[in-house]
Length: 73
Image (cartoon, rainbow, N blue to C red):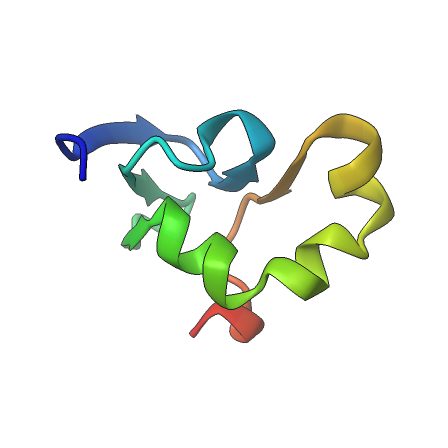
């Protein structure tokens, strides 16, 4: 497996361009809550759901500004 890359974002994001890149993403929301997750694990565990979302297919990503979605936990 390739080296883990750590990214800091302003929101939760799952992006087609990051699939297979071994990325750990950390984001802090407006309530100053910090969340960290492995992008590939979240995609792998929720692939069917994500691939059925119009936004993911049209724009190549899914985002949430406030928190990690309940279906990820």
